[in-house]
Image (cartoon, rainbow over all chains, first blue to last red; front, top):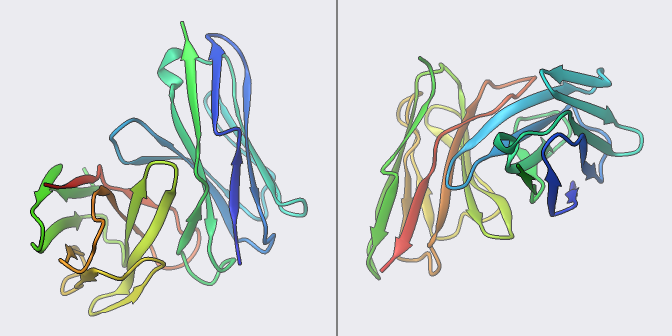
Length: 114
Length: 113
């Protein structure tokens, strides 16, 4: 059974710091992994999607890596800003790749202090 | 602009009442999903549909019902059998097949009064 874990559950950093959010999954036979951002009381916004054949994806100050063999992904945020404050969730397909039914981690709540 | 629209944003339900949450998408996605989000519990799958007139139960389907009569629409009914319905409900859609990138609606917050 696929399980997704995110550590830490919460993180507070001063503005300007580089930071890493972690995501681990128990079944390495995944087709892809997706990172989302959720602002309080809002829906989820897709940040990055990494295919199993890729090692990393970049979008602006965000860089996500994927290591299937170890069951881990990291989301790197460079030069953090107060506007980055949100909850970040990772998700993988429930059954590896046979359908798009996603399993989510519980998220890391990030607070960036000015 | 393409996207997913959930309505209403806030919904209040009295004990014993059925309520229906709306989800409409204009992304031409075949698959649609309903998730429930509770504090500290993450997102849990209620129902999903990969094609019109067909849907499957997720992890917590008891007390909920859905229909998929049109590709664009996937309404969720919270029935009186759902004993603890207060939560944030999120609708999502995707293409059927890789890469399965999800698009989410803005959510409906349901409160029992």
